[in-house]
Length: 85
Image (cartoon, rainbow, N blue to C red; front, side, top):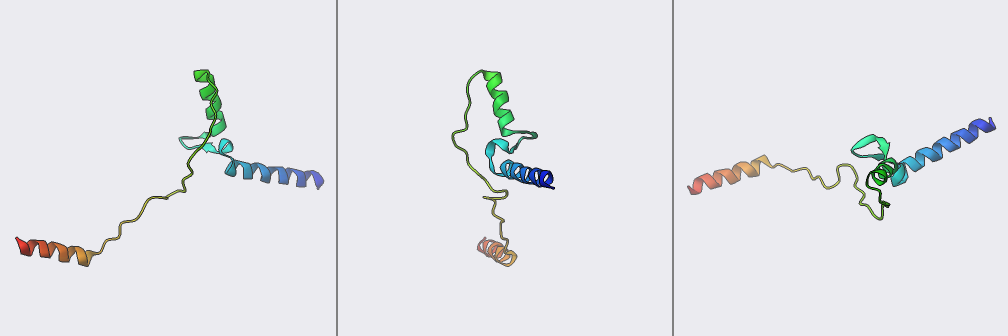
């Protein structure tokens, strides 16, 4: 049981780091690779050292605001515009 507990703890810590650490997270455009693998590929390709110095974090759907439609106000506005003509 002690070995099983060790593996469970190790698995949970690994999962936590995959969610929290940027370099351990899947790359957005290709989830098959991690950000760290992408950085390593780019270093090999261009031959320069690359480091992530800062980044912006977005929550899914953040910044998208649903347009609220008020049909009655829209109809009244169009009727008023037609009355002016």
